[in-house]
Image (cartoon, rainbow, N blue to C red; front, top):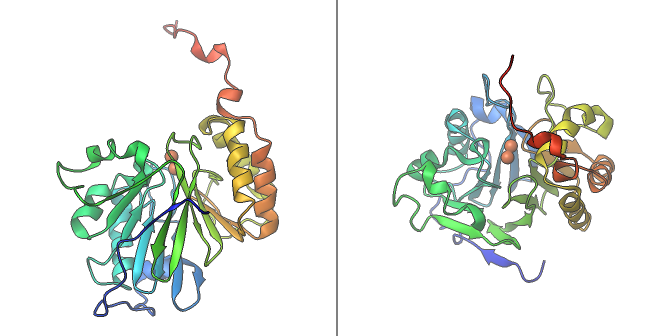
Length: 285
Ligand SMILES: [Fe+2]
Ligand SMILES: [Fe+2]
């Protein structure tokens, strides 16, 4: 990963409260603990979105008193995530909100996180001038870490997170988040699957989710070329678990490899588009 810029909001102050054994409030109980070695925690929320909105996962990563929130979503997920964080940290104590891209299911709660915490917003450089539309003039001043196209390593407590290029999968500026401590890859929309009911069980073979995963990738991912680039990059990492932003997560090297093989051979997006999609619409008879 040499050549990556390293960013940090600074080490934790001595006086900062961090409780590694949180009060088991409902929000913490609701989360799935993906990893916990006593100092590094990864919490997954799968059931905070209700109604007609598309199901979306949210993740909190904590390490030695620092906290990062990945793709927090919209207003409906803000309250429970905020309360879960408060079980570990002081009320305003959130260091980063990481947004893989600019979509509403990713970062439309931006204004709430800016006003209720002292977090920095970590966002692809490509979207830096677009996300102010989610907040008020001036509120992002000194609060943005802009991620260049080649990615970034972000320090978090005693650990770090790698922000891996995932451009055009699907957004033009997009990153996946790799946590080397837990060996979890938070892949954003890549690997997204849409089961008819969200099941907490992880996936151990790709066949379990392929019917509810493939159609999304055919339409939303830009092309097979970028799928291959991403899959080859990810093969260099030790990934034990792959957690997409939607649906069930993939547990174990075997299913992760199965997924990377599938993705590397995928035809999608502009590979599949023909002139039939670009006909002038006609009035229904
Ligand atoms: Fe998206
Ligand atoms: Fe999404």
